[in-house]
Image 1: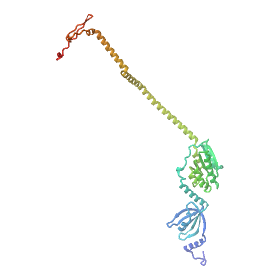
Image 2 (image 1 turned 60 degrees about the vertical axis):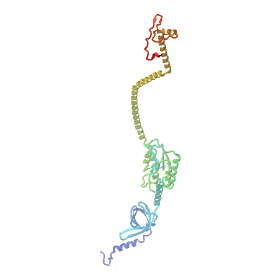
Image 3 (image 1 turned 90 degrees about the vertical axis):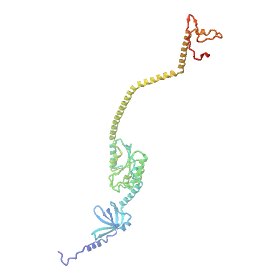
Image 4 (image 1 turned 180 degrees about the horizontal axis):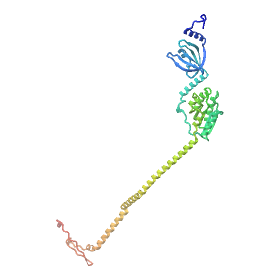
Length: 402
């Protein structure tokens, strides 16, 4: 228990708050590095957020005037270097870091450059789905652009040959990390297109951090992929962010195994499909042949029934046409006329033979002044045959005047 002379006057809350502020006042123009989260803008244009690392966090604040002066406003998930001071807000009882300047750290600068590159490529249509090239159904050969050592190339080759044992593989060794990696990848892509030994390209890596994967976020590699005449499949491992190479590539896979399965179908499945299609084709051909044979048999039966009738009809028409032609033929007409003339001649000859007196009577002497009329019968004897005269026709009225 404190003695009365040792007892001190207690602080008021305001006094303690002011004391804390005086103690924190030397903490000015500090540089603080951390990741931003919970970025919010107030009604007056001020910004409040949290700066954190893996173990701790501190509340931060940017006044509206300072926010208008900074070159880049912080965004959630990005790491920045902040300059400011520590202040104790007595009305809230909290300590805050008052920011007056924001700068990227090295990784932050890379991310800012990456975002700018993405915006520029997107505005040029580099990410458009209609620009993507179609992968071949069954390539003759596959080009692998990856590190010549490590598990990636082994996984790719094993996956491809398990699916298609006699598939041809062309390996183009490249650097997948470091400052020389972008140029190495771009040269390999151009060489692959120039040599044209493969039908599809697989660009692979086993994943990594943002810094390790940065070669695939460069414009040099992106332009090389866009200029490639061959389709490019990326298999850059499990990463939290999609790289620019993934965005401009024609197909994106997470692992080398997935990429190998994407570019090469299973040979056993193809053979099974071919056998099934062969069976379907044989069955369809057999059914079609059977239908055609049945249709031909039906037509043959109809022909067997119709041909005799058609032949008879044609024969009859030909006969009628022949008869009509014979009837109208000038030769036949002349022959009929000759036959008619001969028939008349025979009749005349028969009549002359039956009445010989007519020719004899024609030789009678005509006495002048003697009129021979039809009413006077003439008897002619010739060889004992007596010809009867024709009966006299009665005269018409008025015939006496002749």
